[in-house]
Length: 419
Image 1 (cartoon, rainbow, N blue to C red):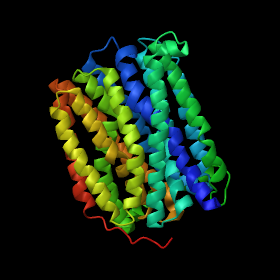
Image 2 (tube, rainbow, N blue to C red):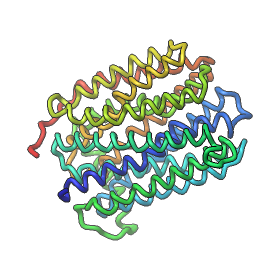
Image 3 (cartoon, one colour):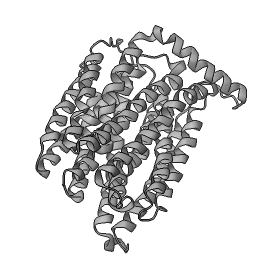
Image 4 (tube, helix red, strand yellow):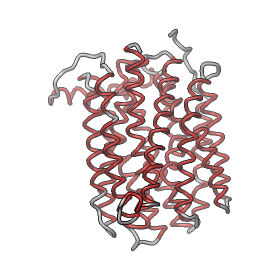
């Protein structure tokens, strides 16, 4: 294996690493444990509201910090260094979740807030490194980005399956009960995340000269952010894409974070919902990999358009479903498109921006995505509280998918560079 392929595989393995947090914690055990262990004293609709608040608060922190951190990493040539610092924050706080006792929902929220901040902050620099390992070649960036998400689905799914087995059969592992098994799962996620972060730190080589962190460097970074805001008019296609992305990725993220909570709220058994999540993970692995290959033959936007149309149909079906088998069917359908939409969005943006500003502009990319997530979970949770109907709340996501679809129609994709 040559150095280029090795660095691309090492980069993709960070998705394998941090997807354990996204799947086991964010989408799986945290919302379930929050409702049934930490926040048992709260009404279900109120606990949904607070779950939305903590997700939105973490997103807001990244909205404020991501562009400055990205500009600083570009200037210092230390994208891997910032990735490591923020990943460590997420890893340590994930371990902290195991310390929150029954009923301690406020403490659990604090640990979770900081863990999600570390997770999302590290992704700013991970995304920016896509251009380091693949350049702006359309075919390579599509393929490598999809490989990352595909490995994320597989790695996250494998650990999630093990953790689910551990919680359902704790006596097989000489564990006292399911609650103890969930807490052990938090620690396993942290160890998994830490172990598989090593390849990207070792094998991905940064191309810019490094400088030391200083007050002057921070001031220059802040200045660069404001300068880039003024100059964004010269990157018109990137700006239009970010507007579209701001809408539709909010819907995708809300589905990921709130699906389990929604299923519980309409009366489905938590064990059945966990199985549905596993279905999504393992279908997502081959489906996302294939998504990256298909764009060798069709416009990258076609893949995103297809995924958004599917999400719109899923939203309507989800608001009407009555049986758990329908939840399973929706899990299959989402698994076919979720990773593809995420991977192709990241790849498309990398083709609309200059590599020398990748960290800074991917800071804006993550800022836009996370600012949408500030609104989405609270919108769904708040509407559920106001109306008393989670079914009406989920329909609000249609606005996001349709609006993003329409804006994306205006984006002109540059031709693929020769590989």
